[in-house]
Structure formats: structure tokens, C-alpha cells
Length: 407
Image (cartoon, rainbow, N blue to C red; front, side, top):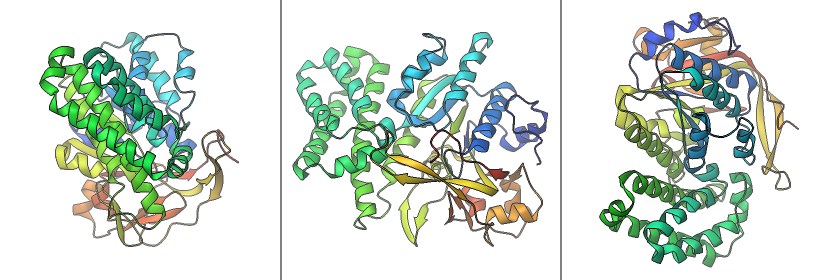
């Protein structure tokens, strides 16, 4: 399905064939092979417009902290001033969330069915546990003041390594004494067990929704804490098999949480990296690394989950270089992509003459014998049965690294 436009404001008619491909799917996930790519950000915004205006989707979910997403949803519904968005996102990595949120707020001014915003990630995408713990502490001050000292202990330790991103927080967490790391895990486990054990009491005091919200925030802090350990083990070559799945498991549960708590007919546009939305396991060097969010959502939702991967045949990609002196803990390199590898989905799209366009992989499963076994992941390739991992692929003829963080 060739496309004619990158411009998010362009007419949407060339996207109409996508309506038949996605059908009545409740969750359409839109990926990208790398963050910080201008063409992917433009295509996501265009797809968001199409899915909302032409297909009736009602929620924008993003690879952004669940706890931090709550005030962004209020802003998108018209609360506060336009310029408040800059303050909300002051510490967030610019991965293309600003423009979609601005569009949602403008759309909602006249829409009969306003679009909601939903964060799905662990707090600060692994940069800090404090956003989630602050919500838990506020809840406990109302409902269970006796437990406030416990959550304050967790916040004291979490504050000692908090950063704006995982690139800042992870090395700071690794430098903590073992006693502090273990104390944080133990305190969070105690809070979680108490929350679950006293569910009838808590829910009676606060109402069901507030209890569910605080519990999911606490679970986000627990999954974030686990992810610090998992990533440290991965980089040290001592990690357990698929141990990095904790973050993706939380992301999947967040999507399901929103589906459960929003209107029964809610349909979700979900923006996240290809490695999160794919429905097959992630493996590097022949070793199982993680079970992605997409795999876990497909297991629950079945055909109500649709994974649309974004990739590029040529151009450039963003390479992240760790630098703890930088605000986000890294800088971006601008690296030229190598030509598509044999056996890659990019090579298959190039051979088919598909420049800017969408390939329907559900049809391809039955109508072609070609079976691409790899897809770009930034400047390299990840091996996976692509026709099983994604339901469709959107290719850009070239990709350009955003200027926001480029070296």
C-alpha cells in the first residue's frame, strides 16, 4: 500500500486501505526501529490523525510513565494553560510526545468524543521511582497513615539515585551499597503485600478506582526496581534468561489497566519502540533476552492487538552514547545505515519497490513464501520471524536523526 505523504496535515485518503487491514482491532501499536527519527515522528502523527478522525480511536497511549501520564491526560482534556505542557515535559526525553499531545488538545476542543492520553511505562521510563512513589505516598496519607514511614523510606533511597532517564539512574543505582539496593527492594515488597492484603479495607476507604490507581503506581515502582537489577545483570553478563521482561510486562498490564478503566468501547493508538510492540521474543546472540509488551498483549487480546512496525530502507539512525555529564545521560550520534541485509524485511520491501508505504504482513503469511528473518534495530539487526512479529510494516525510503539531541 503506497503512501503519498509524510506531512501530518496532508489529506488522509491514501491511508484509507489501512482501515480494512486493522478492522475492528482495539489496540493498534505503532513502532519505530529507533527513537529520535524525524520521519517516524511525522508518520506516527499522521497515523494518529487517521485512526482518530477516520476510524474512531479514542486513546493515545505512549511509551511514557504511567504515573506521569495522569497530569498529561488532564492537560489534553483542556486543564491548565497551553504553556503548562513545557513544564510537564521538562525532564522527559524528547521522543516525539509533544506534538501528538498538542494535536490531541486541539482536537478535543471541538470533538464530540475527546481523546484520552495514557502513559504505560515504569516511572520515568526507568529514570526514577519517585513519580510513582509520590502517588502512593499521597494515597497512603489519606487511607493508611501508619504506612507512610515505610513509603518515605523507599522514597529516601529512590531519591539517592534518581535521574531524568535510565541512562542517568541505572549507573547511579549500581553505585549504591548492596544494603541500600536490598533495603529498597524489601520495603517495596512489604508495601505491595500490604496493599494487596488490605484491598477490601483500602478500597472501602478510598473507592475502587483510587485503590486500583495507587496499586498500579506501586507495581510500577516494583517493576522499575526489578528492572534496575535486570539491566545490571544483562550488562555484566550475569543476568537471568529473559530477565528484562519486567518492564514490558508492566507496560502490557498498563495498557490492559487503561482498557479496563476507560469506556468499554475505547480503542487505543499505542506508540512505542518496535522492540516493545513486536509479538515474538527478543533474543540477542542466540540468548533469550525478553518477552516484549506486544507478545504479552497478543496473548490476552488476540486479534484485538495489531502491531505496525516502522522501519527505513536507507538514511540515518540515532546511536546513543553514554555521557553522565549530559542532562539525559547520553548524546546522540548520527550514523549512516548500511544497505538492507539479505533476509531482512527492509530488503524485501526494497526489492518490491515499496518506498513510502505499508506492507500487510497478515496477507503475506498466506500469499508469499518469502519469510524475512530480521529487522533493523537502530544501526544493527535483530533476528526474528518478521511475519510473526508484526501484522504490518510501514517503510520510509530514508530516515533522518532529529536535531534535538544530535551531537
